[in-house]
Image 1 (tube, rainbow, N blue to C red):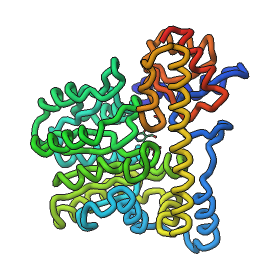
Image 2 (image 1 turned 135 degrees about the vertical axis):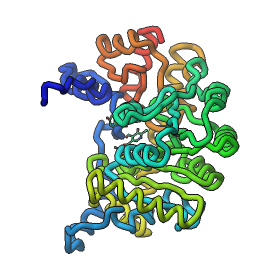
Image 3 (image 1 turned 30 degrees about the vertical axis):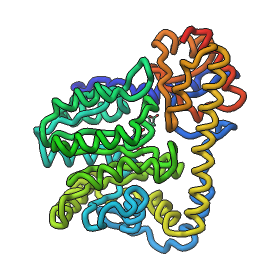
Image 4 (image 1 turned 180 degrees about the vertical axis):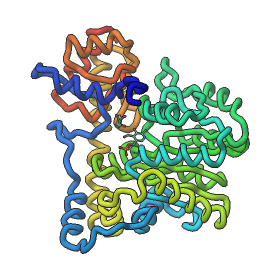
Amino acid sequence: MFEHLTDQPADKILALMSAYKADPRKAKIDLGVGVYKDAEGRTPIMRAVKAAEGRLLESQDTKSYTALAGDPAFADAMIDLVLADTLPRDRVAAVATPGGTGAVRQAFEMIGMAAPEATIWVSDPTWPNHLSILKHLDAKTRAYRYFDSETRSVDMAGMMEDLAEAQPGDVVLLHGCCHNPTGANPTPEQWDEIAATLKARHLVPMIDLAYQGFGDGLDADAAATRLIAGALEEVIIAASCSKNFGIYRERTGILMAVGRDVPQTRTLQGTLAYLNRQNYSFPPDHGARVVSTILTDEALRADWQAELEEVRTGMLRLREALAAELKRLSNSDRFDFLAQHRGMFSRLGASPEQVARLRDDHGIYMVGDSRMNIAGLNDRSIPVLAQAIIDVGV
Ligand code: PLP
Ligand code: TYF
């Protein structure tokens, strides 16, 4: 039977990680995979995470199964973090999932159960895993224009024109904040327009929220999600704790589904638990319990927020420094978009050839579409990167 299997294309981002590691040059810069790194290039364990793990080690007295939906305290804490008081708790169904990716996957499967004919609209571009999971599930998918490669901001007119072709009941996948891979995000006014369009055209939003706290702050980054969840009857939210808690390998995420009323939400809750059971039964617990321990303890939560805020403002400072250096070297403001983008990523707008030259001639690794992980920079590498960007002719 195995002879029927063929080689699958590698994940380009993960392949880049290996290529970087294998590069023997001392002076190399890793702007590839979306993992936060401090100025020394480390991905630290956050203080509150260490403390919560210590508490769990002391106090946990069983490793027995939790529930198909995961620990209820995790769901409550995450719904509060993402939605605050937008909705009554009994209109939100939620299950813990293995990472945000697990939530995305379960969401697509739920859509397939509820509306197999629905088209799932994705931004062009979007996170490559969205596309590969949709393809794997054989879901109907279409792209809407999102990024204006001239201004490096959201192509609102193109997006609206394309979504005008969506049929009632179609799903629109949105990045709640910190768009991956472009770094370009709708303004609050544009989010109002997006929410109004979804509502008027009876479209179902699915919001992927993988970077809450990495853009403009914990509440600001959830504002679009809250706006949409408050305005529409049916909403899907896939949230990740990988980045904002720095617990990537613990595989911690949550899938939420907002129902139009309490009975429908109860059915949704059962459906999500059913999907967990079919795919892996009980979701991972350790990361979820670390998160709920932090979010429900005043001191741990305050410390986590303070450290997350340092991470966020540190990346903003790097953005501003890179934009300023490029302004100086290019004698123009054409790189100012770098300071306006939010989150870990910016799409530089370099050609594939220029990206290859940055790697081959300068030891600078970014994804082939010229997505840079801003957290891979520090004060020493910013002038090096800026000069290389000018040298290859971006
Ligand atoms: N969605 C987007 C847009 C992402 O960039 C990521 C990546 O980190 C995820 C979801 C899910 O990440 P994880 O499965 O590691 O929680
Ligand atoms: O886009 C990124 O870099 C992150 C991390 O298969 C990631 O979202 C990349 C590829 C992948 C899983 C996670």
